[in-house]
Image (cartoon, rainbow, N blue to C red; front, side, top):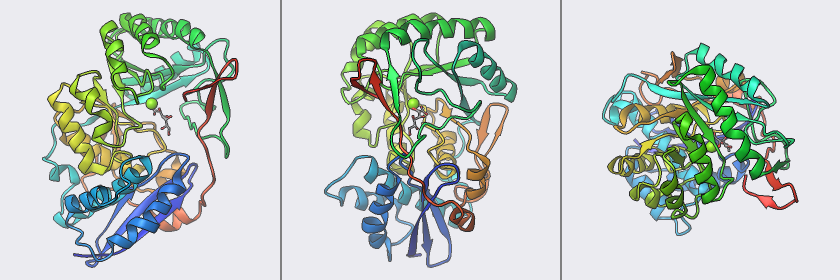
Length: 402
Ligand code: CS2
Ligand code: MG
């Protein structure tokens, strides 16, 4: 079964997505997500200029060998653009393998290790009062875990606060918008929010918070300590993760669990964090970390060191990535939690899928393969629109991490 064609499809049903569709000589095809938020066309070009020509004529059943060919075979390897392209090929080949075998992909990964995939939703609001009512909506929908973000008094705009109730899309303009940031205001405010949330919802609802790389290790240590009474499931991305040993300092000071990894692309990006047990959850994803093959490798390393999975699942990861993530989440022994922001109806129509939410859990499709498709006619109705993620400045104008 040879690869006879591969198409790169860019579409914008409320936001941009890049999808690779690989077609084989037997007529069976597979899909893979290649979306990199705000940098979509760079992955599309990497795929169509450098990867697709090398795929034609290859044996579609050789997933590992194709992965090694695209990774080791590229002298300029790693990085988000390259690894999202490799991921798309890998994911599409797993989809094909499942369809040929007549099995859902999780069966090829060893079968289910649990009954469903616990997910968390996003409660984002300008004020504490509003966020409490959004959390109540999620609880009503059956969610067992909620990420809580609010505006910070004294700051006009803050990361993670959407314009729409229950939906949030950070890539909000063709060129980056600018947000303002004050660590002092933020560190004072966040513990007051979680105090109210625990008072209102009691001790068992799982709560999470995303710091979005904005603190230094000692500031993150202070935040972790101040949140200890509210026993979060995790404090996410407390500091930029380039300096992995920086996490030792946070660890020495707080028992608040730490989740890191949505921007990681390879096992090398998280090796030290995992092997030194400096984090509790690794948030790498199928699309940005080299596909099912490589993410499985990361999760296996994590399992040896008491680190669980907590994959990124924002709306910029397409339903194709979500479907793939769910198969892996269901199969691995060290699953932790899966992010699920919910796509819009337009996105769902472009990507028909069989996974579904029930009572706080997502369940992958039982169809052979991934159980997700792309409707190319529907996709063609939504041409690409440039959209960028914001940037962040301190109140004196200094550029800060976003
Ligand atoms: C966030 C994302 O979901 C998360 O945890 O950090 O919303 C992130 O900002 C976007 O996915 C960036 O593309
Ligand atoms: Mg995040």
